[in-house]
Length: 360
Image (cartoon, rainbow, N blue to C red; front, side, top):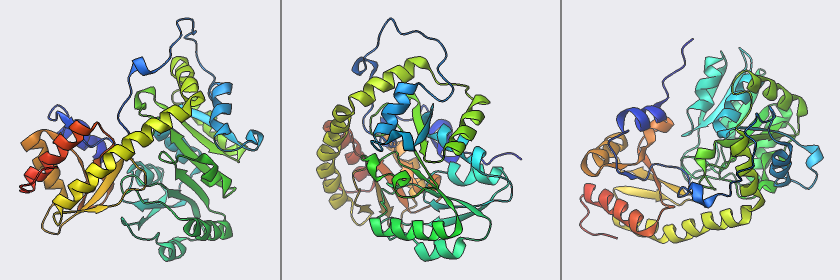
């Protein structure tokens, strides 16, 4: 069965590719460069181990707990490969899967493609998690709940009370939880430290500004599941690039520097974002981001968010992400973790398109 077209990639690489000079669509902090990494000419370019270099895996686990022997993990080509491998290792035809939207299309299309029954829960920006809908959605064959907190694209974060309610429901029915934790700064707060039947997925792409390293991971207390994922990876990419794994190890060994860089961009960009939101109202309404490098704006009823994104592309060669690519509508995701002058320039383009006379 053919899988559905990937709307995010179609927007980025079909409609927009080659037509934009300014990018506020990216969901991570400002990219880094090769010059920002430490490389060693003596590194051997052999195959890596199928589950990833041992020192790198242990360094990843040390972010979660001091008791690294209680967890298992796998290094992958980015978080998306980790999620893809998880779905194909854990799920079987006929399983029931629950996931939230707006979100990442992979979360519902890959399980559907495997023959799973998928229920979508709308977790709207600035609203509480729909716990009652979750309870009503769970059935005897529910296998997996797919979460993303902090959420891409809305920036919503589950509170401790919401986590407790979700886990209580899933524990009662034996449902697995996977949380995409790309934007989690403190992994001691990971789902794997809250619930036994869970998996944490993350990478160096978003917070570290290193998506080109394609370095992600899956972490779980369930060693058998990780072994299933390792075996599936042998049929896909076999192993990761030794060069990129060694680079990633050095990055994580100096993680405080990289996280501070991320925080600096967030702190510098937020006042500019807030000023833009003030000027763009009532056309756009900001959903206050919770330390994510992007922000979600609800669009007024008279604005078609998909058409707005196309208009910005045509008028200014500016790329943003319309809500439609995340399975939603009436919203746009805009990155603000960028250099000040560039950010102001791009946001002023949006104000011009909205026919706002003032500038930031």
